[in-house]
Image (cartoon, rainbow, N blue to C red; front, side, top):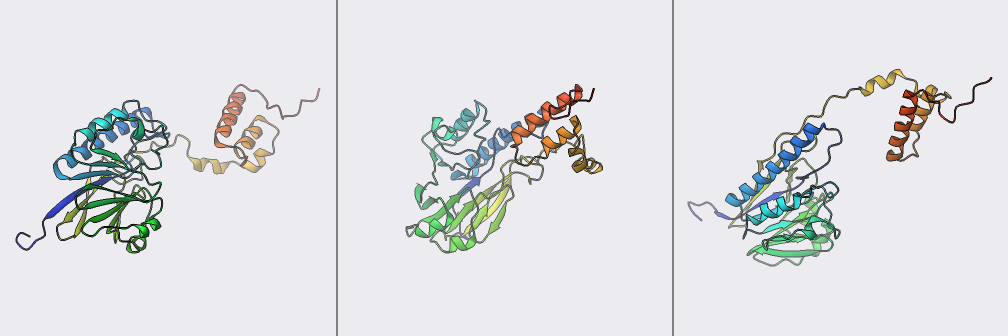
Amino acid sequence: MEGGRAQRELRILAFADLHLDRALPWATRATGDETRAAQQVAFDAICSIAATEADILISAGDLYDYDRHHPETGELLRAGFERLAPMPVLLLPGETDPQDGLSLYEHVKWSPNVQVLSAAELTSTTPLPGLTIWTAPDADELARAETEAGSFNLAVFHANATSEQVAASRIQHLIAAAGHHPFELPGVTCPGAAQPVDPEDPPGGVAVLNLLEDGTLLVTRREVGTYAPERPARRFPTAELAHYDLAAIGEEQTVRGEFVRNLITPEESPVHLRRLALLTGLQALAGIAPRSAPEPEP
């Protein structure tokens, strides 16, 4: 204690939902390129804050997009985390970056300070003296955690969790990456998205958990990401659809009727619908009648 105030014991920097290389199907090419560049800037900012202000860095999931990640994304992450050595860096896979044998988590040659966590079962690790990190397939499983006296027990989830679930365990606090919007509950911190990828997202940020020597935990938030990209205006406002009687048009034995029937058939899959729409639209533009249309009378 100095001056009657508890001093910092250690500082934990936690982030989630960076979504490197995430697809933005609604965006223009320029907006997509700008967003991906902003994601990398946010990652560099996270590493810079960690290097100067933190004792440990935790990624709570959705670090990158498994389906669309760039070939250089793995090297970007590896090099960024290696520069923080010997600071511990803990990585928890999420929904867009699952660990399945082919992920970057298993194929990147991480530096020794990086540890990939697993939520397949209740597990714990002690990256620093006096700090134990827990993961589990469900927050209710935390009630079975056999914690040790003298260690601060912190759980990390890429899912929602409640204050009641934390209170029912010996866990002191839980990082729950439950969405892109940050929030605080008693015993629970959601860091929000590190970099916004949807227009509705708030500015990106990270959670800073400052653990004092008396066991007090102070949680603050630091902005690191830029503001969310703007969704371009629709070229064809959906309100204009109200001018058409779709039920009546769907009864027509015409190219127009076939086009509407294809698009409002609920049992068709989205991918198949897009193919039908493309084919019918091209045929309509070429003046080709659908096969289901009756043959004209002689």
